[in-house]
Structures are given as structure tokens and as C-alpha cells.
Image (cartoon, rainbow, N blue to C red; front, side, top):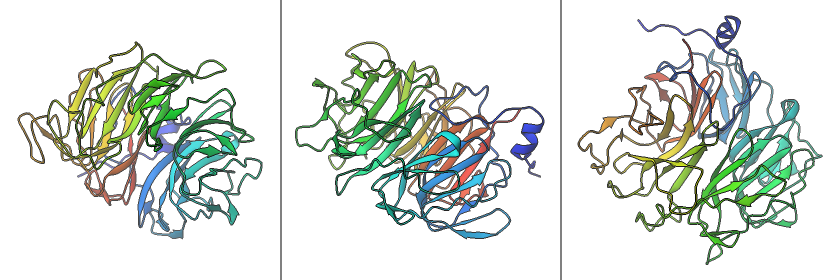
Length: 418
């Protein structure tokens, strides 16, 4: 008979961990449980794309219209909602957002920053970027928007009084910033000391994902760009952000440029996360192709220090299936997508020699790059779009309904317990 897990409230009371805002990289002493908690709410349609953890609250972003408590109570929610991290109950936080929410980042006093493809929040014009107060009201003091008619925000990160904004845009708040900007967390004023000048010959430079180290000193990002700050950087770059003015780091790699994946992808890189100490990052990819000589459909680790000619420390291949999300902890690198296997460099939509089944979600040893035994299983669907490590475990968001062989519609938590 399956063991019923303690609620996070009970675990907190026992002093087993404390809740803190989620961040890039996490110091977990061990791999999370394979048994998800029983009480998380369900998202009844669409997909979950992003999470933010603020004290004892989880904010969830995506493309959906209805959610349900574990006890069966249903609520209408337009692409954004929040639930209690203590018991999973859906909270009154219910802003009206008229388009998909692709990114979230925690703010001060229980506020949250939302980014995505929306044009209005609570009936007010807000294109792609908004700050919501803890009660769901729009913070009218933060007024920075994407100015491009077709632009969107794909990633957000907060460090101190700085909000990093990444996506597909040319101007933000009336200031020219191609695909990547930094703004004041209170006013939204665009930082004049942050302009990395992303470029691509056809003008279609955009950022797919980014991560900022816990100390705020290292920014890693990926996308369709080929030049950054006037220097060649093919789809991955590292910047130093510990000073007043951000500067491109000497770090560079040809590993992505030398990989041939499907020409249908402007970039096959999908998500990135940096370790807690900022010393390395892991990037996950799509690409439709397979093979040990390629970085398509794989997870790969790079060190953040050094100059040109960087090579991956390791690459773990799925064998032709897309990875969409990654969360780095000291104990494990969690990856999600619609993959069927890990450790599969010699397979192509089939298990090659040494392949291990890891449907929809898996964990990789941060040092060796080999799959860990952790294998809760998950419906594959389009894939696991959101993974976020926090002090209590691992949040998982997707478009499917089963996680760890249980019904958990589109979101769940694997707890970190003794």
C-alpha cells in the first residue's frame, strides 16, 4: 500500500526544512521523492508554463481557464492562479490575464512579475509584462511594457532591485533593447547600464531562456542570436552582472554551431539553469535529430568560467526526443520534456545500447552526466514545460494528467523528505 506523504505544513512543524523563495540552482541534500504529494490542485485544461514561489504561496502561470482543489472545488482562472504551499488550497489571487503567461518571477511584499503573450491585465493595457500585487491587483506604478506589436516575454528573473526580462522584442518601455533587458523592480525603468546588443544577420534575434546565479553575478542565456556586444556568440552566451554595468564574458563555445539539427528550428535550445554557486549551467534541447556527435535532443553541462572554445563537460542524449525544461540542484539535474529515455546516444526514437526509460521526466547526476535511478514516470504529452526546485522539493508543470503514476493534472510537487 502506497505510503501517504506528510503535508508540507507537518514537515515544516517537524523542522525538516524551511520555505524560501525559489531561485536558480538549489542546494538539495538529496534527490526528491518519487512519490508526489497528494494535495496539489489540478489545472483542468491547457498547460502550465511557469512557477514562482513566494514564502508559503506558489504562483502558477500558463494557458488555462479552470483549476480545481484536491477536494474537488473548481474555480475559473485566466492563465494565472496561486495556491497554498501548506495544503494546496487555491487562493483568492485571480487576476484576469488575456493571454498565455510564459514566465514568472517573485517580487517584494508578496508581489509577482508575469511575462508572456498577453495584452491586458485586469482590463488595463499591459503588453507582455506586468507586476501583480499579492491580492491579484495590478501594480500601476510598474508600467514597463513591450512596445513591439508582436513581441512576447519568455523568461524573467529577479535579483535584489533588478528584474531581468528576456524574449522576443526590440524595445521595452520606449527604450531600444533587443531581446534582453534589465529594469528596476519598483518603477520598471530600463537600466541604462545593461545593453548587451544581441544581433543576428536577418534581424530575428530573440532569447529563448535565461538564468541568473544566486549571487546575481552571472547571467547565462540562449536563443537565436549570433552576436552579442559585437562579438560572435552562437545561441549561448555568458555575461558578468556583478558590477554596475553588465559585460559580456569571454566564455564562448562552438559546440552548438557545429551541431546539425533540423533546419525547421531557428534555435533547438529550449531551457537553461545555472548551479547555485554559478560555476556551471545545464542546457536542454530539441532538434529532431539524434546521434552521439550531436547536441540535439539532449541535456548538456558547461562550466561558466574560461574563454573561447568551451566544450560540454557531459552530454546526455534522449535518442531523438525533445527536452523542454531543466532544474539544477546539488543532488540532481532534473530534466523534463516528452522524452522516452536518457543515456541514449545510439538510439533514434528507439532505445539504443545502455538506454534507460525515463518517460516525461528524469534526473541526471550533476558530475557524471549519467541518469540517476530516480524514475517516477509521467505522461509524455507535448511535454514537461516547467521545472522549479525550491527548499521543499521540485515543482512540475506540463500539459498532462498523470505524474508518479497518480492523477495530478498539469502540476505536481515531488517533496524533499528524509
